[in-house]
Amino acid sequence: MSPIELIERIRSLGRYASVRRAITLAAVTLSSFMQAYVIEAFVEPANLLAGGFTGAAILIDRVASLIGLSFPTWLGVLALNIPVALACRKSISTRFVFFSMLQVALLSLFLNLFDFPQPLAGDTFIEVLFGGVLIGISTLVALWGGASTAGTDFIALYVSNKTGRTIWTSVFVVNALMLAIFGWLFGWKPAAYSIIFQFIATRTVDGFYHRYKRSVLLITTKQPTEVARAYTREMDHGASIIDATGAFSGEPVGIIHAVLSTYEVRDAIKLVRSVDPFAVINVMPNEDFVGNFRRAGIDEPLPAHVRATPEVDPLLAAMSRMRRGAGFEPRMLRRPRSRRHLRKSSTPSKQ
View 1 (cartoon, rainbow, N blue to C red):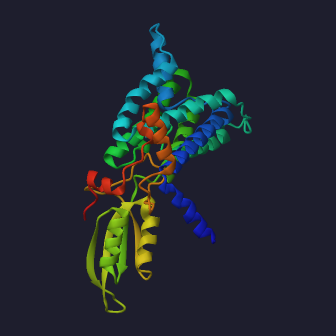
View 2: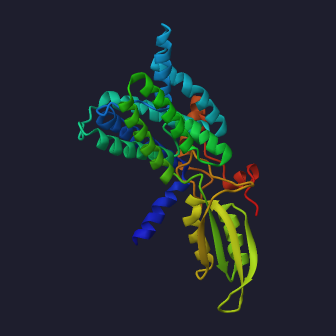
View 3: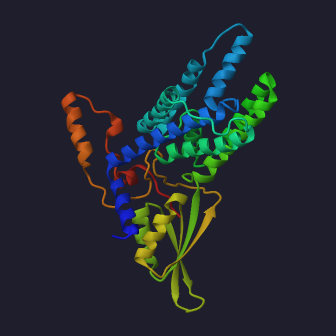
């Protein structure tokens, strides 16, 4: 068995919902462990100020203290997270919220269990650089796994899911403004380093998380009907066929114009080449898109289509029997709807 065949066989395991849940659990565990390490090894030694909901909760407490009141940070974080989590539950899924909050709980657990070394203590700028990149990667791990790190991630994903556009830059601007207030109240040097830290983390996420980025495919082929039929069936996106003539051969060809999510490009190319090995494919970035556009759910770690998805997942079926025997069935573990149902409930892009 070649390495490529082995990789494809491993990927095919993603057709089982139980495997995808295991991937999400592993992702949030790794993400929370990485965050705990970054906080103890880089953030605390560099005396960086908190951003996101934690920073907002601290700021509320400090402002309340000016008028003789107290608002505990843990209560502030909880109060800020709950309404956004409920909104994400309706907009995305209960499963997404559950695993995101589990990530936060595991982070707290790891911070209490482990005492990580501080390899760069005393070199604040290097701590900021390494810490910013690693905290961004930890967020990416959770996102790729079908969850998030809660807090402002909830807001970013909720808005992106509604509008189809990323707002990580806006999240950074809000964090920077909040940290500027911290700088005015408690000193500018820690605030300045914290803003740099947040910028690096945000750019890391924005640079590698492509779920809301789109690409354009221009496919030149002598089999336009067959290629377009396979593309619309397997990728669940619309496309347009343009009649053209090959400049070199003078023979009639078809140009298929299609817009799809960037993370789907590799699967689309593989599909087209399986129908027409001689097709010429041009991939271009898409700056904006107006119209209906279908995106896979962000609560799945494997958004690309996996063929031969079984109607019954053996592990989930056994768990379902156990739940029915116990008299309850949590929705988080139910098998996701098939692509056929997805087509009925959402409108694919039409071009």
